[in-house]
Image 1 (tube, rainbow, N blue to C red):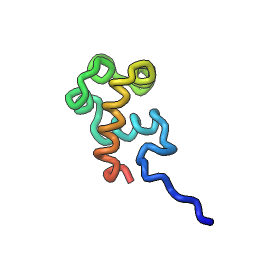
Image 2: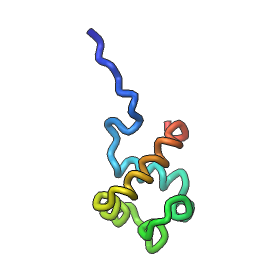
Image 3: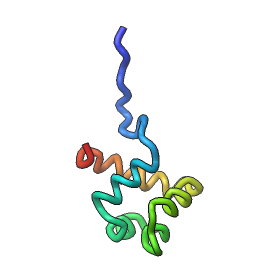
Length: 75
């Protein structure tokens, strides 16, 4: 029997990878415009953004949704 692949684009991808791909594609300036959170606008870094997103469910959800909407650009 063959294994079925998950149709979830977030399956098997870490938050760090999502953030790195979004930052490489959009940059923190554009991310800060698309998602209004301080960690993208005030002295942004991957590390500080990960810390905030891991603690803040609504912000993480917005970042994940942005990734899903743009996942074809990252493949």
